[in-house]
Length: 180
Image 1 (tube, rainbow, N blue to C red):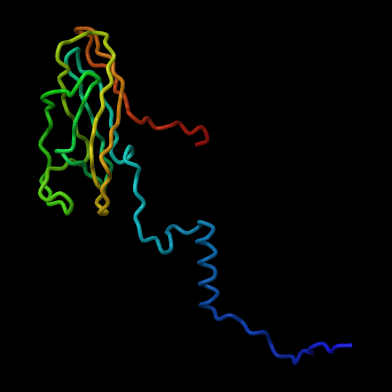
Image 2 (image 1 turned 30 degrees about the vertical axis):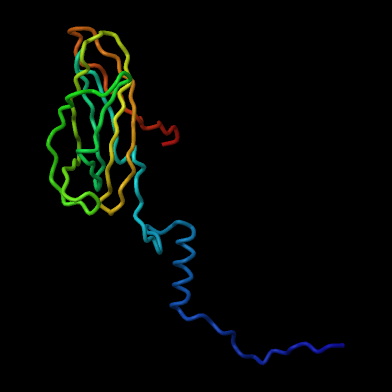
């Protein structure tokens, strides 16, 4: 028969206190219970449709109003904004002036932050007509990450003469969460 090891009465070796703290922090991080991420090298970026929210409305039978709501920490390039409808490019878009920025990707450019409103003529009015307005844009995050050009679309109905502005249509409406 074999022999079994016998205890010498020595106490078990214990981990030092700092090792216990490190283990506890790692366990909490793994469970997602810390208010920060360990080793998070890259910033959390919004999807482009949230960073650059697009909406529009018909102001009257001849004019559309496009609106970009730009999230804090993000900006859009003025020269990258283009608007089209199903039958061609909307001419003479009244782009407001932007703020000059010395951009590491595109040099000296005009940019927008916050809310940008753009008036768009639609040409010959056809009341009650439904049209699709597409907005092409490109922007960046202050964190140094630029998005590829993005297109967002809304479907608008031109109001009858004298009826006033139509409702604002969001290209990506927030989804209702029934559990909050």
